[in-house]
Image (cartoon, rainbow, N blue to C red; front, side, top):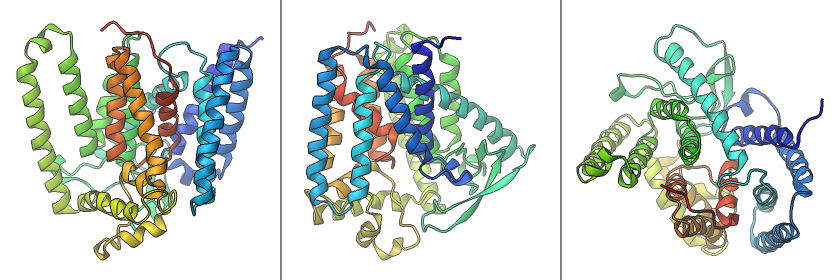
Length: 411
């Protein structure tokens, strides 16, 4: 049976999307000792992808991709000369080089890469499975763990045992939050609930972006419920901001007519919910709210010591030197913007900011509200969540930076 080019591309897109999920703080790396196999699969899948689509590229497209690739090689090469973390820099350089070609040779000629579409579909499935186990296992205890997985993803790098349900769902945070009647947080297949919330949130943004030409309301509801089940304050604020933006730009007669009353209510809800959850976290030391807030100070101190080049990509051993003694038992980091600023200095931070700014400007010029919301909310996640060098973020930033001016979308 002959396999069409589109079927091959879709298959590769699912494989690459699955690797993105695996790479974004998934506990499956601890459950299955796979080493560098995912990275190798990504390289092979990217090579096959480019070879399949190569014949469809125009000379202008091919020249543009090589032009962007050379600029990136020179840019990261100069950084490599001066930074102390050579291997981490090379890894970042290779990743973005691959994503330049993946984004630039995207098979679907529309406004969102096919890989992100497959990522959202996989996350929808993961969200549905996690909700089943979260309700029947973590809350009702009708079903029970079938095994344990050991992980060192803790504030002090101490190895802990994590209950596993058929390696499809993991209870990484069994410490309950009292304001929600003591229920545990849904972390799905990720190392912690905030990372599950992050991936659900990105999938929701993609889902909303595609809603203008797809009827996907049910999957959107599942993703929203999954986000709520993580009990993450960052994710709750994300949802409220997203709903507020949707209300502001909505063409719905009811929302449009009463937005002047609805928006203040949303702001009040954000304030009250934020206060309650912050008080809960500070009182019970759940999620270490004080540490999360202090990370911005720590990152700033580290950046000021090496403002241009930074202390080195993912150089968390040196970053600990800028932490106060009271943080000795919780030296993890929690946001991306100070991570890249401290590790890569202004040199790498400019690269990240360029992608966001260009994504916003291109969207604004095209009057594409869906894409504006996508860029703005991704920046919110960037300043509140720790996923600086994950594949999913780097790929999205390449999309922002390389995408040509899209067609205007009728709102």
